[in-house]
Image (cartoon, rainbow, N blue to C red; front, side, top):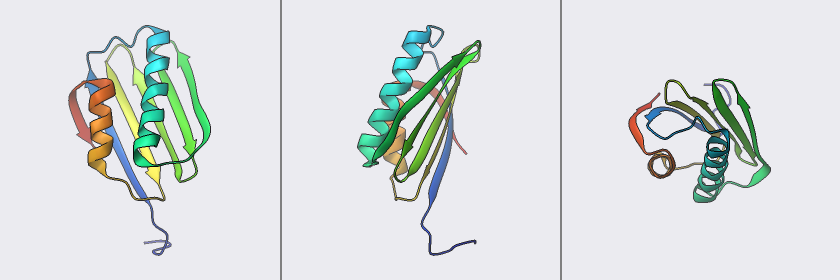
Length: 112
């Protein structure tokens, strides 16, 4: 392992949801609220508020926090959401999954 004394933790989670993410305002607000809640719950220090962009087939968001960052991508047609979290600070996966359950009401979840 490179840099064995450097702590790092990551998780990638994919999910399917029945939430209506086709409405740009709904999707953007959902992703922003999710990222703020995630950072607050995990005790991360936000450096840059979530950056959110919508394209024809989905919405993506990224938040940079002092301990690293998190990106979220949604694809409307497939009702699919992908979340990538990387941190140099320990976090509990169960906390992440609880926040995902609250905001996305997933029908299926896969931890990669």
